[in-house]
Length: 613
Figure (cartoon, rainbow, N blue to C red):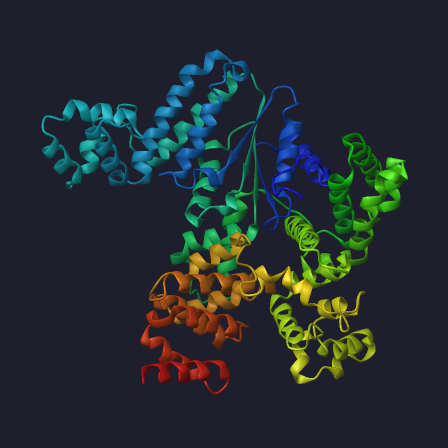
């Protein structure tokens, strides 16, 4: 089994990406610089940032700070949280020198002042007053100290805080600056921060920001703007790891009033692109893994798991690094692993796993979109089910059948459930597969030979899956489905919902959104995602109905998605059923528009009407 954590072991040859970014940062003519390290959720961004941090820390006169944007998601002001975290790092005298202490204090006071004039005075004032009156600490200590002097009467104090001139009342206690102009505050902070860097014992400051795409849209923009406005001074470099689709959505969300419903074609994209270019100077996108890279990655994962000696595994890693320097396009396969280990007896356990995965790796790559995290999760589930089969003493169990079925489960959950229903109705033998295997193995006639009841299987990746060994039409599949039964009713219930799906849900949830805008978002942002992400979105939408069955908005989204021909009716029926008696009456009426084309809804309405009698 493998952990889903950031690793310092490079199984993907991703050190080239870290080295490229390091070379950009080392070029002083490029500074100040902001680099966007872009990639899908689980594509390896965090591991590259980890490798980059490790390398940069070896550079003399270079300070490298790591900031996790998600950790500060719940803070009152994301800009201030980022600035304060960076300033705290400068309190380390061994790294930066003792002579900058006063400069740090000055900058901390500036951050506290910016909380007041930038985040919203009453949002800060009331918690601060509460902290003072209860004896607790505040996010703005000097404000509380000022309130102590003014508090002749606690009731009067609260009234003045809530009154019309809250801002004027509170500003008298913040003595750091008499100038309340926001632009001057920004300029002064930049000047003071630049002076701090000059006095420190470093020549270059590099800040790595990770997990930004897990934050809510406003937090993402706050962090990006904090970098551009306050920190982007001489001799600084920022590397931001994020899914670019999430960042684009955050920009659209933050400035929706300015970029929605414009008449000029592509105006929205242009505005988003221009804004993104101002925030990030160099976008660098991680490529999807190729078939050979997927096979190499899986081979090395199994080496890590199956080789008993750490020395043997380290020897394999060294051999892989040398191989990658000479050959970038071939597979680092079992034969090369065997040569690196030397002793054939040490690789017997490994050989079975690697030979199986090597045979299926092109389909794994295609089905999991070359995503390292999804591949690792797939392998963890595979190993867990193998162990379950052993504990349950299932006879004649075959790893290759399990692996092939799991590929279908991950790539096409709906077809996986259809296959389950086929085999369970015929003592484990899915006879319908025989016709499909015949069609798929005879590729010259694929397009013209799929019957209407099998057309859902007419997809290139499923044709590849169907024709790969082992063929399943004569195999009793009951034991394999028995160990996979945790996934049958809610295929993705235990998977972490991808951030882009969460973000899209956040964008669509507000009540009262016009139908035209909802349809636009569904078509332009959901339809362009792959089928797995679409399925994850509709499963998440179903879960929203399960937890809030009386909220009409979720039913509206399903209804509009059906009108736009999204494949979600079976999930919607499950959601409707789960709502039970809490189903709003208006939803039943809205279903009637589909009864002519969707028999499932007709049956559902009839069952509801029978229940009323």
